[in-house]
Length: 121
Image (cartoon, rainbow, N blue to C red; front, side):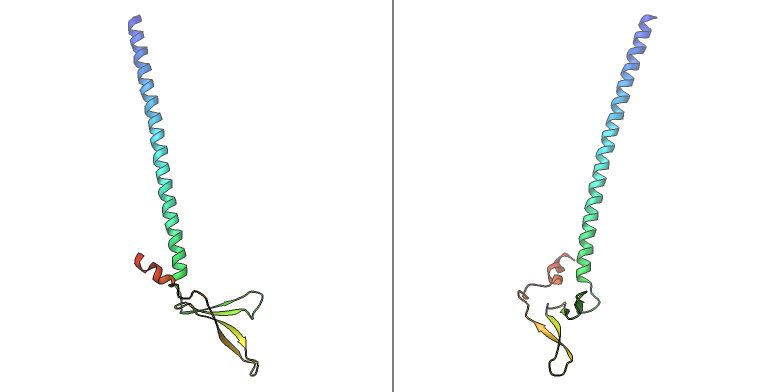
């Protein structure tokens, strides 16, 4: 009877050890899968943020955009989104009319954003 109890005890101990190891392995496997999911999620979010930034820069309702300073109405600019030319609104001294005067822009020969990303589409 003593031998049977010792054998049962040994079998129970082995079984408990195997079960505990498998739980530990399952936990580690679950942690590794969770980490992979988190990394994929972060990568997808980063790609989506980059795509949103590109879309914000490249999708336009029209060729020209007007920008105005919040406090100073005289700092109103007109931007040609196709070739990068910029005008500022000025008042004609003789007629007192508002006119667009072109501003000299340095490094305007840099390609616009559509040209930079046309190969990625």
